[in-house]
Amino acid sequence: MEMKKIGIITSGGDCGGLNAVIIGAARMAHHLGIEATLIPNGYAGLYNLENLNLVTIDISRADKIHSGVAGSEAGHSRVKISKINDPDKYEKIKTGLKKHNIDGLIIAGGDDTGSVVVDLLKQGIKCIHVPKTMDLDLQTYSVGGDSTINRIAKFTDDLRTTGLTHNRALIIEVFGRYAGHTAFRGGLGADADAILIPEVEVDYEILYQHFKKTYINRLVNSDVRGSTYIIVAAEGVKNKEGKYFTDTVSTDSFGHQRLSGVGKFIRTQLEHYTKQDPDWKTVLQQEGIYVEGIYMYPEIREVSLGHLVRAGATSAYDVTFGKQAGGAAVHLMKSGIYGVTVVGVESTLITYIPTEEAIKQRFVDLDEVSFHESLGVCFGRIPEEYQPKYNLQTGKVHRYM
Image (cartoon, rainbow, N blue to C red; front, side, top):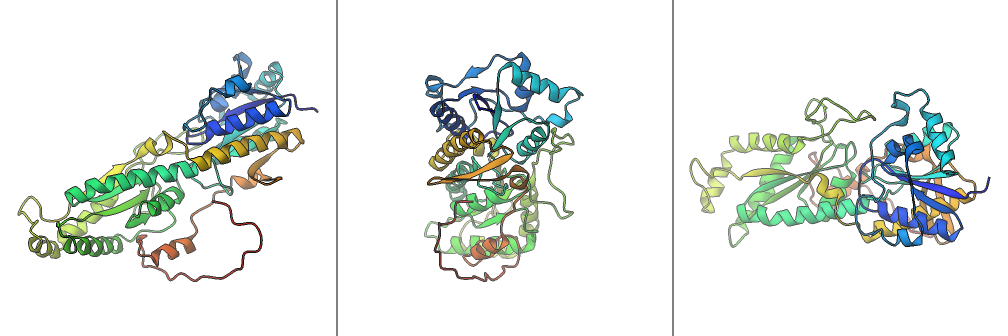
């Protein structure tokens, strides 16, 4: 069947690069003689498609979308189609698609969104998945990852000034759910002293000793008696019982709880060791900072960056990748290729993998952790020696993951 009209959906959490996906898909569709329309508010909009008036994204409308702004012109929702309490839900969606003469869907989202793509495909609905998640835990690179990492690094670096001014240790809590990619790369980008991720079980005594040594070394070597210590922690770091920190018992339609509170837990663990350590009185008296009952050990504060890391601006990398992925999805659909996730565009080669493979969760490589432990970063464990292998690169260079 000839592809005459496509629907564009963005779904799941907001992040950088989504508007670039819309622009890339809409402009490539126009170039190939295909009409593009925007289906608003993710899968909620798809479910209610029969009753909606849709916006055609022609060249003039696409020109009004700014690819450098995070978030999505199309809007989002966290809706799992299979869990909608309506036995006719799939027929309702098909009726909506038929009403608007939509032949196929380009859907940008993460693992949850991708799982619905797989579900829709089984119902005979033609879909292409564009990988989008700031968590970076898909098997492919995903739109939003670079933007989020850069924002984490920027905000963390900015907060260093308040840490130095008040001689504080700071714990920066960041999004990323069950994988530590954003904390790992964002923390490295900000020269964090310690990075705590779900992939590594944290020994808080080891973390404390690294904090103490680093903080005191900075203090005694400062000509203005200033020091700080920066920890970047993923929200998915678990407690000593192996449970996630959450402030709610409710879950979204995909079964996810809202993670929150790991920064406070880390602070209490460090304060526990700090208050028992007599060395602080000696050091702080020596440096002229100690005040009985007021300043007897370094102050530790936690800061949650929250939605700041997924808002605001989109990085140039995500704008470029988003446009390529959106445009490549149209080419794949026009060629009769469905049920896949766009991996990337290299020269004339559009790479893709089955969506059910793409959405399998990917975690931080612990060999990369040991590499950065060699550089002095603490991950809350006894450092493991990096064991490199050597390979002469003869083909294309490795893409950013």
